[in-house]
Image 1 (spheres, rainbow, N blue to C red):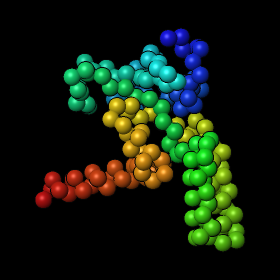
Image 2 (image 1 turned 45 degrees about the horizontal axis):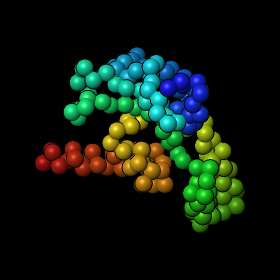
Image 3 (image 1 turned 60 degrees about the vertical axis):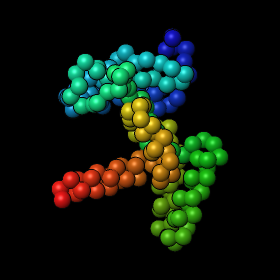
Image 4 (image 1 turned 180 degrees about the vertical axis):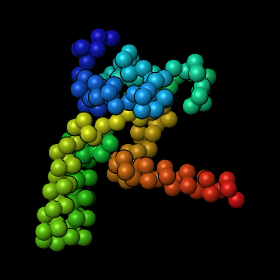
Length: 164
């Protein structure tokens, strides 16, 4: 498939993919040395960076021994009715909880978040197997901070269970 002719989704666009290559490096964490960001596979409007499965230091593989990473928009304010609905929910919370200058301040922050929906700062790599993107999207209005918080609760509980 010719990469040049694909209209990629923003979180895997040329602009963002080039940033991934600079951010996700072996120098920052050995794991990223196993992820091939320089020869991604393309399917539909997505890019997938495959992981070298010949070394099994990090991951338990299925019988197909495939594992890949792809881009993810961290905080989603989609450019559709659902995204507008999410925005309206947050705005309702702000109106409920703040008044006057504080309300203006936080409404301004909310608008900045919405306007930066498609920005480099709002994208990251996430495993494409196992439906983590779907899980993130189904809890907490598709927000990375909520997803990480839920994961931390799960692993804290698991750690405590294993220690007793």
